[in-house]
Length: 298
Ligand SMILES: Nc1nc2c(c(=O)[nH]1)N[C@@H](CN(C=O)c1ccc(C(=O)N[C@@H](CCC(=O)O)C(=O)O)cc1)CN2
Image 1 (spheres, rainbow, N blue to C red):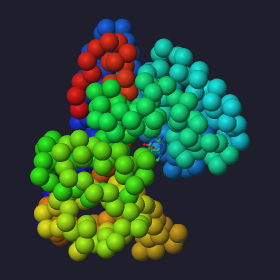
Image 2 (image 1 turned 90 degrees about the horizontal axis):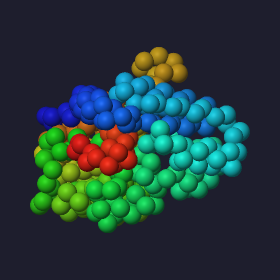
Image 3 (image 1 turned 90 degrees about the vertical axis):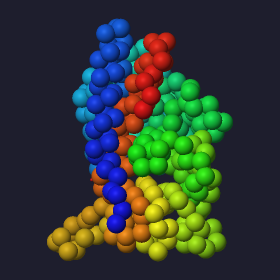
């Protein structure tokens, strides 16, 4: 039976460290500032943004939230991001995704000052991560959190281990693969066109699922003793809980996979809470850099 890697507990540890380091930085006259921008009324996005703003306050940050209506124009959003770029009290800017369809997401992300891009989505930060220039990069929060969870069971150096990342998104799959490579794992990125995915998954000492398909990765895809990191967060119908009720599941069939895995992250309570904790860590890092100080390591 696998060890369950508790994302909620680890997220609390990260936030506790952010709080301590924020207090230390604030004594020098710099308070970390985070601006969170949301456009529209998507209920899940509203929950995530509220959690981010709440966590930022809890950490002692200067926390600003801009909630814009669904019909906000692209130029208006660009203007807001430029204003935040120029605001010295703001060290981190996060624009919640997805944006409404009439707004070019790519343009908005590239408008964010790379040195305030605490989501790590700007080309400059993608390039820094891709070239292993991690000292100056912002690493996207979900893969950064997933790596901390992995570190708890496998340590920092993954030399000699094979890692398979299922999913090739810019937000999770590709940065995760780069982080695993930077930790010396031998990395394969798999996707919907990969031949015999179950057989490839079974070769992995570290299996990362980031496909966005509920419970696609079955128990017999998991090599005995492997570490399984489930990045998927999918809401599915749960008629057993009552009519119209839903429940959250990952991309991994958890009950089956935990029988084979050595360690596994749950959903909920796994990578999700770590995403928000790492946003706090990235914002703190940005504030330390702005102050010309060495940021704490997470
Ligand atoms: N600009 C960004 N947009 C989005 C990101 C991101 O990193 N940056 N990631 C996701 C959503 N997300 C944060 O924004 C996020 C998703 C899920 C969780 C989380 O804690 N999930 C809980 C379950 C919550 C529930 O009950 O619904 C869990 O897994 O335990 C946190 C953050 C897309 N957009």
